[in-house]
Image 1 (tube, one colour):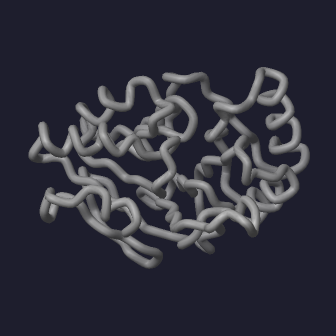
Image 2 (spheres, one colour):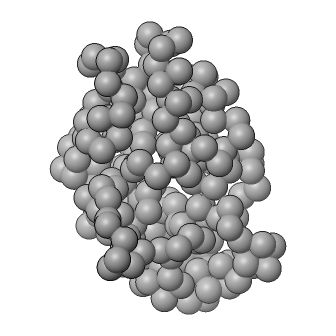
Length: 212
């Protein structure tokens, strides 16, 4: 597969001429374009940096072959599209656009006890690439490439280090990084790289790709 990093937490996976899009958020300038060329869309949770709901609705309206998979809190906002919108939860497994997808997790990482928590799922694609959404979720199965969130109100460096160690992938790729300055990006590379986690960390520019 080819993995392409887009703005913040948005990624695409391409294989055999087909494209899987994960978390097309409102912070991603080309979200509508990505939805317009994707064969299927996966959404981890309802926060706008992971879901541009209007863009997804427009994509479903204009492209009758498009399918979307998401937790119930998201699919509730995408009514009227019949069986092209699928509600998923932890333990589910399905195939879409030529990709095998397993679903893990059920809750967003806690920001603060005063802030109500929401649903969040992670997706393991083709048994290789794990997008955890906004959670330090450990699937308990082998993972080749782990996407690691590195900025946001819920992220914690110590917890992220333990997360990478617990999942023990072959490599990690930095995502959820829009709030980081270049200094912050370098700091994430230092703390979440091989020296402390035992796993090499890759930082991709927006639009940059890597084979996974």
